Length: 92
Image 1 (tube, one colour):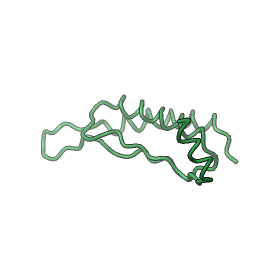
Image 2 (image 1 turned 180 degrees about the vertical axis):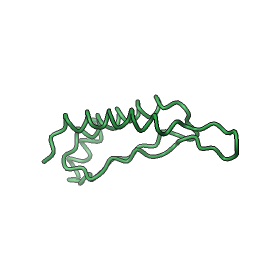
Image 3 (image 1 turned 45 degrees about the vertical axis):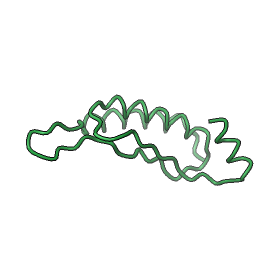
Image 4 (image 1 turned 90 degrees about the horizontal axis):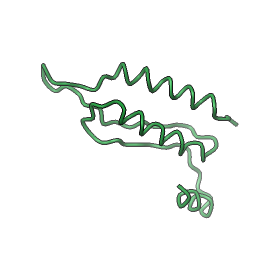
């Protein structure tokens, strides 16, 4: 992160959002939650972000009987973490 921040400062680059991509066909929602924490930590370094993009990588069923990422459970857990992040972030 220090290298990125130095580049942003030296080039006067405006960072308006951050994106992550966790991979493909991921079943374990803990992978997404861990990546979200990394994204939240990175976001603390930038003021006035317009967006945080949590990307993709969810395992989707292509045919009957296929297993899939539990999106509802992920949504509940990610919402809780996002609200905690938002609460601890000063918005200018």
